[in-house]
Amino acid sequence: MAQAIGETIFDLLYLSFALFSGLTMLIRGSTPLVKKAGAMAALLGAGDAFHLVPRAYALWTAGLEANAAALGVGKFITSITMTLFYLILYYIWRDYFRVKDRRGLTGLMWGLALARILLCLLPQNRWLSYRQPLLYGVLRNIPFAIMGLIIILLFAQEVRRTGDRVFRSMSLAVALSFGFYLPVVLFSSTVPAVGMLMIPKTLAYVWVVVMCWSLYRQAEN
Image (cartoon, rainbow, N blue to C red; front, side):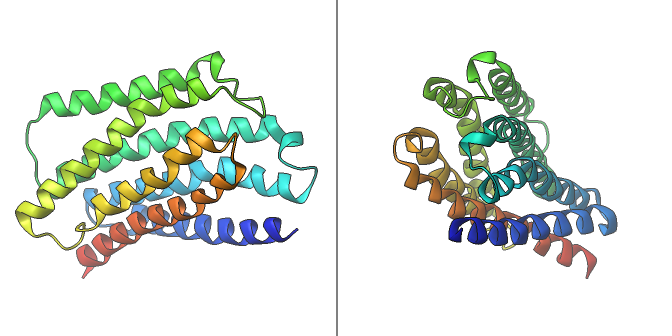
């Protein structure tokens, strides 16, 4: 019961913040860049809701294993939306730092995103099962992790070059999100306690949204 209460409160606060911030920036933002940031934050909240709402329901009812199908569908949808999240973040990087050309890099990001989505669509993932194959959990996260690494390097490079303060911590936030997420992919099936790392991973995404909110406030003032 304590887990159900704690997770439900945390998830409700997180989803409310992500959706409120994202929709506010998307609707009220006066520039295409702010609207992109709003779309990204709203997508984050909406996508995670497909996983977190069924999880909360499962914790309050018959348990996680009894609701494996709903949790699996939610996890699948979240995998797709998080891929799009990083693709939008790439375009935010391009627009904010006024990056021109780099067609090869853009093609690489799209290629990695499509590879990740195609891997997620494979039936071997067994999304509807409670215990899913570790091999496909690793495979589908390889292009995703490469996307994250590229984002880390791109923001670090531009922040160092320009001295930007709005996104100065973006590389760290993304690095932390993957640092907390990858052990869950690798070890949560054998060491369930590792799943607790999803909480600090979520807080890293909150940090990303906070930076986008700073961009919104800066643009509106």
